[in-house]
Structures are given as C-alpha cells and as structure tokens.
Amino acid sequence: AAKAKGNTYFSNKEFRTSILYYTKALEFDSTNYASYSNRSAAYMHLNQFELALLDAERCASIAPSFVKGHFRKGKALVGLQQYGEAVDALTVALKLKKNNKEIRDALQHALLQKKDYGNNPIPSRVQRLNASQVLEYLGRTEMFPAVAQLLMHLFILFRRYYMNNLDLGSRARLLGMDVDELACKLHQWATNVDLYRLLDLPGTAHLLFESELIARHLRESDSQNLMSG
Image (cartoon, rainbow, N blue to C red; front, top):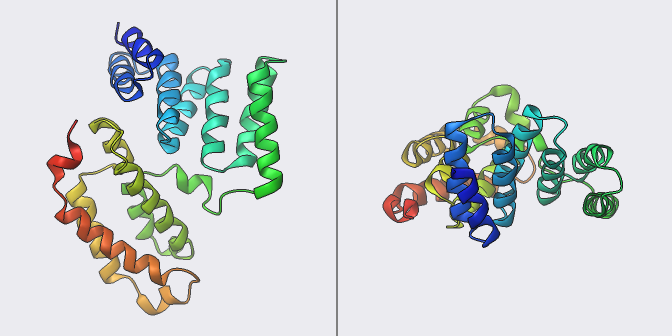
C-alpha cells in the first residue's frame, strides 16, 4: 500500500512525498528492490544524486537482473559527474535490456560527457560517504592527502541538506548524525588540524576557513526551521 501511494505521488510529480511512502514501504520490507529503485528516481528528480546512487546500488545488489537498478545507478553517476562508472552501469543495463532507446541514449550521453569533461575530481568512493563518515575519514592520518576532496564533498552534502526539498529521514541519511554533534565535530577538527601540514596541500586553506563558517552556521541555525516539513 505504501509503495502504491508512493507511485501515485511520483506520477503527480510530488517527489518529496513519494519518498516518504517509499521509505515506509522499505521499513516494512527492506528487500523491496522496486521501492529502492523508485526512491532513487525520486531523489534524482530533486537533484539529490548521492542518495539516488545509494538506493540504486542497493536495488542492484538485491536484484542484479533488474534493469532499472543499473539504469538508475548510471543516471545517478552522471549526476555526480562520474561518467566512467556511469558508462559501466549503463552498459550493464543495456545488456539486460538490449536495444532500449532510453538506456542507449543515456549511455551515449555518458560517453560524450566522459570524452568532453572527464570525471569529477572528487572520487566516487568519497561521494558515497555521508557527512559523519567524512568526518571519520578526516580524522585518519592516512587520509590526510585527501582532505581537500573530503571537505569539498562535505560542503556539497551541506548544500544538499539546505536545499529544503528533503524530508527529515533523507536529511538524516545525508548527515549520518545529529546536526549539533556534526557541527561540534567539524569545529573540533578545524581547531585541532595540523595547520602547517594542511597548508602544504594545494587548495585547502580556504576550505579550512569555510569549514569553520559552516560549523558556526550549523550551531547557530534554528534546527526546528531546518527540520520542518
């Protein structure tokens, strides 16, 4: 019933509400691959490509022969400008449903984008992290060379969070922890990081400054207003 309601809202282009019902369907049955696929599509309509990718990958892992899982994965990766991986996913989709025009067109688009622009400088493995996981990685010594990529992804997640088109559960999935705790941990990291070592890394000085601004904004924001709706 929840999935059917989600489909109705999706058909009416009420994507935010459809996500709520797909989530309810998944709470009832976490192996419902079609609900993951549909929620992924809804997220893509809201330009929430990180969440769309996670749902598409979950769908494909549960039902590898279900073409829409691979198709949604490819489309989400295009949205994240990971064109090489998008080509791989869409190739799998086309093998499962040969001569499908929609898949073929999406694959051609991904190939052209890959040729013209290359891939996103933020690795896809980083784009799969929620904000809590990013902070965990920032605290690892071996991840220090990737600080700029991690911070850029973290800022993108914050922009997604503030887009105001997501329900509370989706916002929680983006952050992975309470917003106040996240602000505190981000501030602690920015305060304790080895500044001299950080400045040796290209393009990180302004990111450190921005991380402090974001931490302050998160602490001072009206959480009820952020979470409303």
